[in-house]
Image (cartoon, rainbow, N blue to C red; front, side):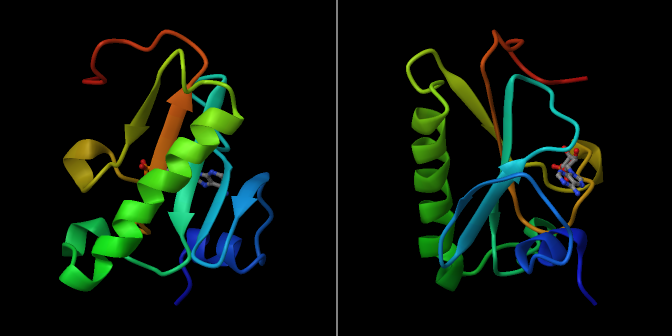
Amino acid sequence: MDCIFCQIVKGKIESKSVYEDEDFKAFWDINPQAPVHILIVPKKHLEPTEGYQDSDVELLGRMFLVAEKLARQQGVFDQGFRLILNTGPDAGQEVPHLHLHLLGGRKLGRLVTE
Ligand code: AMP
């Protein structure tokens, strides 16, 4: 069964795309928490709550490189930005498919604990 981000990756659900390559798609969050709020999503369906495998290491690493590239493209690299990866219910994870939040463009609170 397809999850919502799998459907976005496949183009079955529309998204405001900002980046795509063979392994990743990045698009604007539908409920932005900052002027820049982009989700970096591996096309492969990985679930953080299931834990990662050694074979995921390269993909996980490249996800951060994509995030950095987008932070530069969006003009928030120098001023600063935050990457968030929610895992599980206590973190408020809504979508089971692995994704990194890229947040920037305003002064963010020291820690997001609410
Ligand atoms: P998380 O709580 O880390 O699982 O975050 C899921 C994020 O996905 C939330 O910030 C939602 O606003 C965002 N989201 C859910 N559905 C969509 C969608 N169709 N397009 C863009 N962002 C979405």
